[in-house]
Each structure stands twice: as structure tokens, then as C-alpha cells.
Image 1 (cartoon, rainbow, N blue to C red):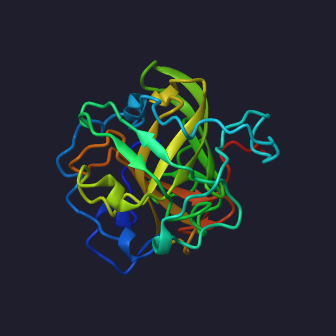
Image 2 (spheres, helix red, strand yellow):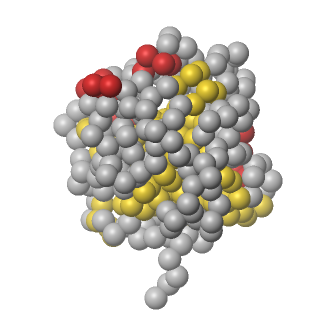
Length: 284
């Protein structure tokens, strides 16, 4: 994900206005620090993706599954875990009707800010992912669903339940070369208490992304085994569910900063008067 400025007022950006704000999930996912990103300044001028290279692949329980390969999302490679979905009791969201189980995640990020903190996530609050998040989304900028020009930069997320496919095609700042990467994985909704007090605003990080396959590995700083705490939120300006805001703490920074803020419009929806189209679709 690239770090971009966003004109629309989204909860994830710490806006003071509330008339056009809406979060995903129950009330305990709606606490926003508001000042969390004010002092970071480390990656805002870069593509924002490089922080994900710090994963140590220690999760152990989430990267393979031996599944039946019939989910229709891959070329036969197993990349979603199987097992019994462990749900966080009465704090759980209704979730999607289709998805893949979360069986736990042990993770020790190794970044310049994470220190030696280790995490043990044992349950998910949104079995199969959030019910309102589904389909394909295109990254857009400047409140314009037709920008950026796909000839210059293109990115999509496709969510099926809690599984995702993230495709980025642009110049990789790490190599200076135009690159297309396809990253696959899943997300879960953590119990905030399992962040303990290691990350400020722990209730705000309502999802953790887990990357299980990356082709090519290392492109845009994304590697298999990496996990990122993030926030998913909708803006009501474009019609609820039509534009998804995403902010991620790629460094697992205890201060609760985020290094990326991006907006995505649902392909086929009209956002701010413009049709959101798949940037990778062949021209007619």
C-alpha cells in the first residue's frame, strides 16, 4: 500500500468532524487516538510498504493448510489455514457467511520500533471477516475514483470473506523498477487485550493482515509470513461500503503511529460522482 493524502474525512485519519464518519465493527473498535501519527515522519515520503519486510515468519500456525484447493482464488497453492475458527466469545462480530478459520497467530515483529515485543493472538472478533467488506476495491487518490492513471500506478484488493488478494503495479521505490506484485493472505480481527499495552490505541487496530504468499517475494517490501496491524473504516460520503479506508502500523510502533493511509473504492460503485473501475481490466 502506498502512503497518500486523502481529502475525504475518514475516522482512520483522526478527523475531528463526525458527520461523515463510520467505523466497521462494534463500539470497542471505534476508539481513535487522533494524535497517533503526528510525530512519526519516518516513511511518509516513501511508498509505505517497506515496513512490512520486517516480519520474521514466526507465526507457525497460519501459513499452510493442506486444504482442498477449491476456493477458486489461487492456482492450486494452499495459502489459507484450516482448522477450527476460534472466536472471541461475546465480543465477536457476526462476520461473513463465507471465509476461512482463524486458528491463532504467534508473532514477533522485528522492526526499528517494535523492540522485542511478542504477540499471541488466540481468537478473532469477526469470524470469516467483516460482513461489510467484500469484493474488489481500487486504490484512488484526491477524492477521484479514476485516479491514479493505471499507466502510472494501480492497486487493488479483493476480499472473499477474510481472504485477500492484493495486486500492486507501479515503480518499486526499493529497486526503481516498474513491478507487479501479487500478495495473498487473510485477516482476522484481534481481541484488543491481546495487544496488551504494547501498542497505543490498541482498540483502534481492528484487523491484522497476514501475508502467506507473495509473488515476487520482497517486492514493495512485502514478504511471506509478514503481519501488519491495520484499521478498516468506511466513509459515508460515497455510500456506505463503497469506499474503504485502510491505515496500517507497519512498524508495530508502540506509539500507535501508522505509516500508510489509503482509500479504496469498490469496483462498480460510484464514488464522488465517478465510476470506480478495475484498473487492471482490459480496455474495451
